[in-house]
Length: 217
Ligand SMILES: Cc1cc2nc3c(=O)[nH]c(=O)nc-3n(C[C@H](O)[C@H](O)[C@H](O)COP(=O)(O)O)c2cc1C
Image (cartoon, rainbow, N blue to C red):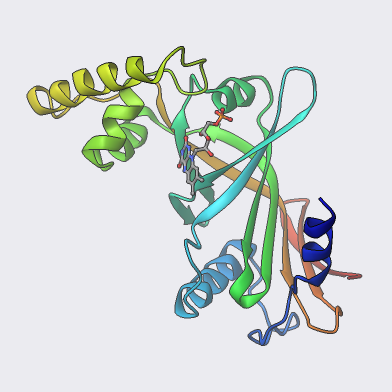
C-alpha cells in the first residue's frame, strides 16, 4: 500500500506537448467543435478515441457510469447502442438525464456532455445491430447483460446456441437492441496545460441558442 502511494505521487500527468486550442476561434455549435477535436485525436494517434463514459442515475438517485463506444455524431447529437434490458437501459427508462465524458490523454483533452437520451427509431437500432460482427450479435442475443451469471459454463453453452442461430438466421435482430441519441444542453471542451492553466470552454443551450463562456481552470 505504501509503495502504491509513492508510485501514484511520482506518476506524471498532463506532460504534453499538446495541440494549441484557441477558444476565441471556434464554431457556433459544439457538435462541430467535437468533430474537429475528434479528427485531431485520430490524427494524433489517440487509442480508441470513440470510447466514452456514459453516466446515468439509478433508482436510488445514485450515479452509475460505464465505458461505451460512440456510434455516431451529427448535428442532433451523440449516439450509443446497448440493450434496453441492461442495467443502463432500465435506468435510462426511468431517468433520461445523462452525461458523456471523453478523455484523450495523448492530446490532453477532455470533453464533457450533459443532456438527455432518447431511443431512436426501431429501424435505425436494427440497422446498428445488423452492422455488428457475428460474435457481438450472438452475445447481445443472449439478452442477459448485467444479470447475475451463475456459472461461466452456462454462458459458453448459450453462446454456442446463439452462434448457430446466427448461421441459420443471419437477419435476426435483438428486439431489445437500442440506439440512443444524446441531445446536449451543455458541452465543455477542456484543453489541459502543463502549467495547469487549463482552457475550459463551455457551450450552454439557452433559449434555443448556444452561448459560449470560459471557465476558470
Ligand atoms: C472499451 C469498451 C467499450 C464498450 N462498449 C460498449 C457498448 O458500445 N455497448 C454496451 O452495451 N457495452 C459496452 N461496453 C461494456 C460496458 O462498459 C458495460 O459493462 C455494459 O454495457 C453493462 O453496463 P450496465 O450494467 O450499466 O448496463 C464497453 C466496455 C468497454 C471497456
